[in-house]
Length: 161
Image (cartoon, helix red, strand yellow):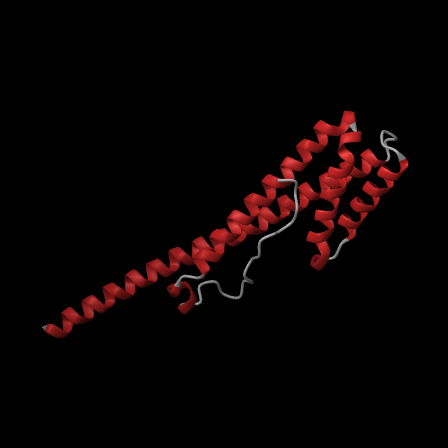
């Protein structure tokens, strides 16, 4: 009689552990998907900002030196490799800050583009932090619920904030 109660308790614990593992694995999968989506949104906003800056540089509103500085920074940001992307985007932010005051009709558009990049980066980093916190839990690590998915990283760049 006692053995049957022990088996019932063990089966109940295993059932609860399995349900928790299944729920957590699904949540982790959804978070990884959200990280990928947020990263794509950030890449889109960075590309839009770069295109806007290139358009501003070719508009004739700025002096030639400022136009060349912006165009070079925008080109470097667009063509940068993965390991130098954050530095190139930060350099573009600094170039915009140094020349934006001279681009009177473009100030509002640049401001919107800069805010959109800030929001996309913050959203991405918030999701990455949530994902990393969940992956650090003991049961997630012990049960290897993250599978082979790489640990996501935050994006650290100067975005004018």
